[in-house]
Image 1 (tube, rainbow, N blue to C red):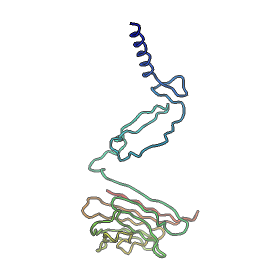
Image 2 (image 1 turned 60 degrees about the vertical axis):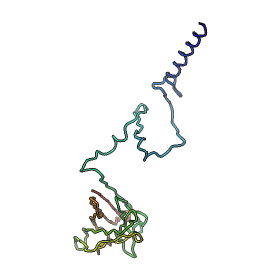
Image 3 (image 1 turned 120 degrees about the horizontal axis):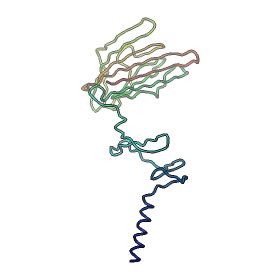
Length: 220
């Protein structure tokens, strides 16, 4: 009987410990684990592509940590908004030339300002090298100060192959973009229902002296 009483007492005692609130640097914990101080985690694993990791930790002003579902942070998808992208790359240089290392990766394509001799040209390539030839057709609006506006629809497209997928000029005589010129490019990838609209803008600033290059890609 005495042994049974001791076992019961121990069970109640340890059950109380296991269910108690624990405080670190605080004598008055408010939750199961209450930390008065910083948190450091030395090793984390990238789980961005793991569907089972579908919760994100959030913190309120009192330091209470809970979660929200990752799905709740994603845009509502419907036939009008699904698979849409808006990406941009805006940078400045002081040399009068574009930065050949910078480009916008959007949908199937990469777009960039690139230096060709003394000119700065608009160029593009496929993001992934195709296994067979792909010909892309474009239209281009040019807006510039010298004589205004042009709309170009080249009859020949640009063909990308499994061996020639480097950056290349647009198939128009408007590939070269000068100061204060605004170009808008439209194109479709063959066999897909995505429309790409690219805005390219180049501007020289005087104070301070910089050269600004703007690329905006919208994929509808």
